[in-house]
Length: 423
Ligand code: GTP
Ligand code: MG
Figure (cartoon, rainbow, N blue to C red):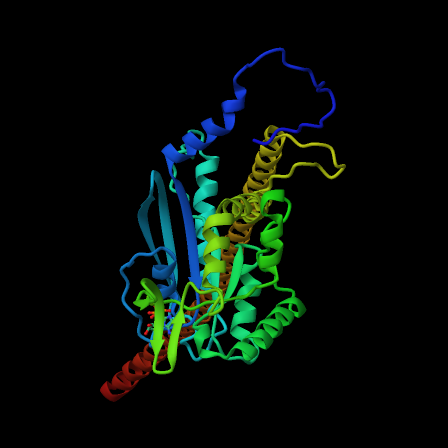
């Protein structure tokens, strides 16, 4: 970590003899060399704009890679990692390519998979950082250090797809815009095109990577190079003999474009700036600016803050406790709500049952009354029938009496008659 030299409390004292910490820079270099470096480049650009060719040309090798078809349903990202070695320095290089960028009819969502990819790499690093047992020294850091944005050599203005995509990416990655296949455009047109692109980027508020000018050793070259952006590049792995030297070039019926000739294109400028001068700054900016922003947003989203509402420092412990209390409170509230709901339900059910019971009772009463009425009617009927029967019986007895009297009376008359007849 860089220490603060002019900080308060530290007093400059002279050394009386050799101590040895002047070997620190060598120690740092040795450590880094032993460990190796990693560098991750993202190439964003339409299909066939020369992305693969430029990577091959930049690193003087042939990375595998098939040309892509134009019929991709969406934008995908393809990542390849290579181990490169130059003298005794090892470089773990990852090249990520967009596949199918600009090929869809509806280009609205083209940037999304790129943003997602960059965020995924940040997230993986954050997760490693948040582990209790971190192994960051052996962790394969896949965060994108540089995004080469390939602009088609139209000579007109930037496409809206380019502006939208760069705008979405500029807070997440170091964007280095380049004009691809710049041998397709004349020198005077190229000058105008560069100016046009730069002004469009500015007016749309797109922040592209600026080569740093705070380090004296590179301040001059970097500030000059900032003025040459966006670099107009030509890629080729074909070698052509110029004089008595073999150089990378593209041959045309009317002449030869030499890739590494600064009068022909800005390829050398790009290589110098990207690999020889500013690779470490690109790595550093990725960590201290882009990753830091991602980390801050992510941790804030998780509820972590450095200060409380009164701007007093907030400890991790307190934040954790606060978050935990908040969670427990929520849980309790939920529980209480559920309990209330249960009670309410039981009450409702109870009322329903009571109502049903009442209805049942009423029905019973109704039936009972009906039954009683019926019974009473029958009894009345029985009584009237009984009365009738009694009446009938009385009449019958009376009739019988009458009959017997009549018979008696009749009998004596016959006897009288018989007696009279005998006389
Ligand atoms: P995809 O991976 O399919 O999207 O394509 P790419 O962007 O990787 O392009 P690639 O490098 O495969 O190049 C596509 C074609 O353009 C090839 O025929 C290359 O020879 C040609 N090409 C590459 N670079 C240049 C250049 O700087 N100028 C010109 N004129 N042609 C180039
Ligand atoms: Mg390719």
